[in-house]
Length: 201
Image (cartoon, rainbow, N blue to C red; front, side, top):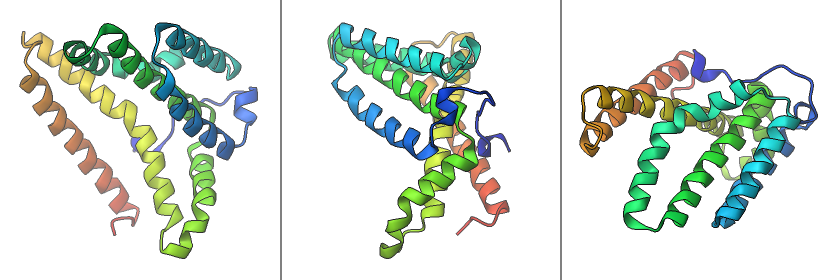
């Protein structure tokens, strides 16, 4: 079941050697920092920084593109909607922040084994046992959430391709309905996989 496996690329790099917990913490801080990326200059600096990190991680361009490619139609829709309600600077900075956040999450999964990522999350959440929280389940949910971002974006891309083939590029309903159905089917498949592993409760 591919949704339960990561996109880890076995390679020797400084980022691969960084402890998973540190990478997850850095990801959270970076995503918060992206909230302040609001100007074209700031977007340029953020893009350059992410590109440098991919270089440090020795991630090839094709592997990096695989993390962003599923977002292409989703990003275009968001950009179009934002352009209708805001100015172009706000619209582009918002879409850029989304892409950069996904790219950073993708970099974490590309340089960290899923098992190590889940173990790090579980250790970080261990204190929550005192209030009745199961760290293992929360870690699994967070790991799946990270991996689900490109999956959902890929579904959006497929819907967009089908929409364009039917000549309905401008129909919001023709995009939204199949997208919701596709995501629900994915959720059902994921639920069945978890149930098969005894995690249905």
